[in-house]
Image (tube, rainbow, N blue to C red):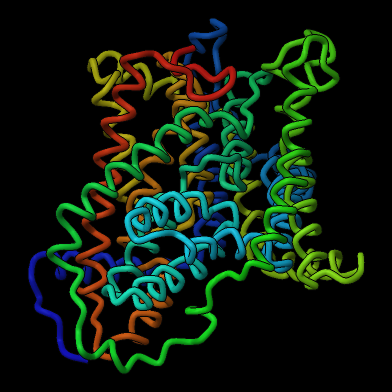
Length: 507
């Protein structure tokens, strides 16, 4: 492989890679943070702050005593078992894993093969952005598919690969539907919000309105940028592509038989979801809140995870039955069990994450730190748009080193959410700002576990493709997504629009 030119950009990338590779596993990072909180609770014990919401004094308590040791040992298992994201993620992964293995989700993505040339670019962005319905699976399904689409139409396949990767990774936080990301992050945000208000609830629909709007806006901006700027400069067909050994399954278009099965599955799953929605919006509907008869909150919103579970199960089952990937009911169980195997590392990491979060809350360190940070920002006059952009950029920078979105939010949320709360902003707004920064640079960081996979796919078409080739293109789209989202967030804030059902920006 030829040596890439060592310009300023590549030196920066190499520095990121070098630093990131020295970080220990997330388990050890959070175990260290957990131990650090316990030690600091003894050092900082007695420091207090006045909760502006309740007018009560909040004091840091020490765990370095007999009572503290009792609390730690009797709550380790309880903290793990009751951590909100744990059950939510496992339930969602069972359903999404089944739908993926039954072929329902991959079939949705392969519909791109039927798209005419003039609609291909926006279709790639729409489908790539919405691909997180399949969670990380979209990052290994969409890029090779878009590369093969470009190849079959004698367009630069590596550029097609980059488009699919940028859409699926940098656009990971947006969607037209409620996805696993919404469920996972809202669970962490909900736990952080309860540090300051035990009655506050954050739902998976917390950022839904913004995400639907941003899906279309990001698609429009990225399409214009691609057609007018990126393709003329970077998308060139090379002679070497003529000899590419492209796997047959990448070039195989979706068949009419599969499309008919997909239509049946979408009709069944979509009809079910529409029924759930109608049972919520109709007067005195059974899925409204049982005591207040409201839509926000409601049984529909609080029960979003089991509702989505059935959506994926119905879609996967109908599609699988139609094409033969699901022959018996036991196939469904086997597919779900297989999906759970991929969650083993997540279960291990959750143990220190959950205990770090609850220990941070129990010692009152999270509340005191958040109150003092909020007071400092207020006295410095650093609130509003400047603060929002800073939070987005901090999340963007951290994402270059730690690529797991839920991992970063797990240690940022206990401070960021209460701090924003005391400044008068909702947990939903704090979560959104984090998501925008976290998602944008997903395709840019070489520390992503999927980046080597993309290099491998690119080498199918060009053996000597370098890291710099991929980085230079994905960097452009990362910055495009980031700037677009910052502008959209500022406009959203200035207009005072709700982020989702019952989710305003200001308290």
